[in-house]
Length: 430
Ligand code: GLU
Image (tube, rainbow, N blue to C red):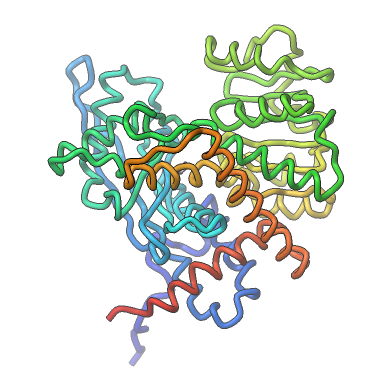
């Protein structure tokens, strides 16, 4: 008689042959496992999300018809604290993507040692097709549906792709209405007048800049005069580009969903930012040469900052990249194959799980301020942010030197050890 295995290797939705973001995350875990020592006993814990919630989000459109959208909230791990991670609204969001993004939040939060697990949410919708009223109804219904999982001590959403302070305000209000009391700590990235933190909007870009400058110092690359190319000129890429320009670097190319622009002498960054604000993207910006989306990757530069979506640097374009350093402002922009190509070329990759951790670090400050109802000055916030980012990056740099591994694997070593150590100390229930 064939025997039935006690447990299946993986739940059905975690097909190990899976490609895409979740498959990439699993490969990253496989790469780190040999460095985990006895903690490797617990590594399976990281290969399955703790909880997955898929919700139907019906709303009435302005024209009177009813539309249904698919929403998700995934809590990947809560060994070190409540779930924490953003919510994205995008037409291409999938469960597999949200699972990967939630797992990267677990790694990121452990890498900077903030007391959170990892979570992420999303709605499969192109928000640009919705009116403001429709967007509000979608946000409120989604928040209500995931209300069984979120809460100030359970799981704390925040902005991500296509979500912002206004959406966080609606989320906070909806949750508060449902529980019968204003609960500012349920989301971070709120407007400052509603318990938000100074410095939160710029925090991710500031963190990207901070680790970039640190890595430049450690590798002897002068920031002054360095040529920088940025993909995505929104909250993250726009802020990082501006801070690099203010430090004397030249932003020579920018790409977003509306086009790609190049100016070897350096773009006028404040003018590009103003243009993006008015036109919704860099496409058509006067005072720069328009280049093809493909040619953007081959632009001569020293620092490349992918700050848009995942899966942008692949085996097809990695060979063309001329930068000495890639700073991942986006989550998951580089595939493992591209990572190997860049490593062979001697390009230093500062991985997302540390490079873009500035956002969640200031989210943590916001959450602490909300709990204590005592708010800090912007200088204090930026100073603490830089201290945490520099400290975390320095420790990861040491681990990379010690084990002769990439900074991505080193970040995973530091983070997975923290998560699995917490897991081991807590023990299995029952
Ligand atoms: N969405 C941001 C990220 O990917 C911030 C998450 C947060 O602040 O919770 O890191």
